[in-house]
Image 1 (cartoon, rainbow over the protein chains, first blue to last red):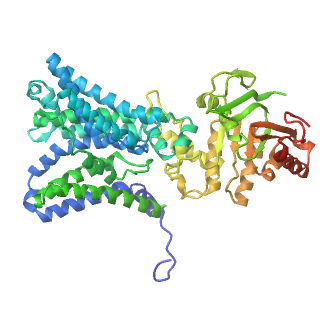
Image 2: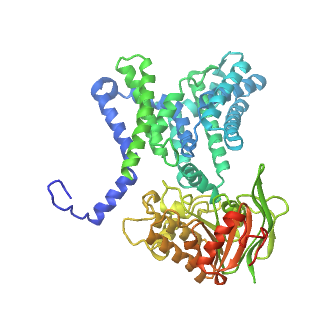
Image 3: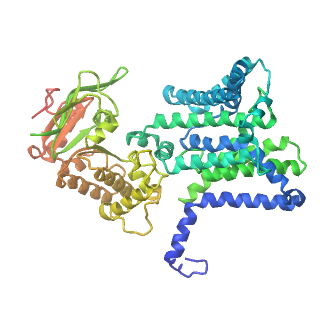
Length: 335
Length: 261
């Protein structure tokens, strides 16, 4: 019934189908809406900055540092787990580079060591969660401190200049400027998003990720290898964190042993703002991808608005709490 | 009689707790076996051993179609045609219908790439033929959270039939269902018999088990307290005996190892 007491007219099949598509993609449409809204806000707020191209190049250059981790982290959160150790794994991977590079003077061996270290650290998280049965929240807080400690001990708190990498093709391939202005790391982010999207939506692995996060017991009873699925998801996050750590160190041409600090909030905010459920079972790569650029833009916006950097933490924290609360309220009302 | 499933002297202990102790249990081809027992009698443990979820303690033997099976896993049990229909735990609520139908058995190529179109089409076919969904509001993309209890049961049951189960295990299928949905569910159990398949029907409501079962096995405190063919006993006699079981642990009140009457 409408407000004026008339019975509601039955919808035509076309309108029905449109409604169904709207509902199915409501989260994706919502996140694009939020992105456009925030962009317009900034455009009105400081038109000089946001009509020029420089700010967009800056987004493309800095957002990938955490988007590269937020995209795979989406997998872990869909399985109903969480990983809080990735900031330390960024530095742990680079410590692998540091030690191997200093010993062998080979950039490529160092790069390989960095990625392997990341995978191993991720596997350890997965192992503690899956085999020992510790809640991932606690397990990865533990490994977060553990790996940071290992990094400090192994490097003795000393950084490492990354200029030797400039002589190899790795430098332009990871952080070069394509066509003079598109940062290579932005293309890597798109590549990561496409690959992870494929595995999440078009591959058995992704089907099992969703089922594991939705109802772990039924998935197990139906023969889904829940443990392997989670282990793999953690390993992928470890790999990506090490990769992102390398990219960041390349961009600034120095490896700081504190690398990764400051990436926790924006990465998590990207995943949750992107519509991934904190309870597991739902979430999209598209959402995380768009949301990470919103988060990147907010950071720039705060600075452009003349607020101090202290505000970023306030706002990211707020975004995490608001987006998970909104999701929960909405999903209760919509179904 | 040919047995599709035979278990000899099967026990399962968790730490110091013996969930089932020396159970002998069998299911004939095209037989519906009702499994009765109070909470904690060991029904679910028995089922989980049959489905390969738990491995039995050393000394117990499991035969499927007359062949001894040593290391039964969930996958192996499924390959042998043993399928469980759980009541609430069967479905992943936030996922679409087709993902639930193909849960753990996704159609995919050699590299694991999903055949989405194939799964959606099969689901659409099943919806009209087996599940009886006629409303245009339900599609293979519909999220199962929106389904009623009976519909959800239908999804789980259809899944079992679609994957050519030979022995279907129904774990308290009527729990929480309305009267008409319960009837639908019991009709399905009879349908298993008509389709030439076997079933184990677990419930603690004897009024649901009695009409559809060929044989009834009573578990008590981890042991088979007794079993009998349905035509040997009226419903009232069964109820009287169950009181006895509750008090003494055996159907005739004397022999706790007694298997027949």
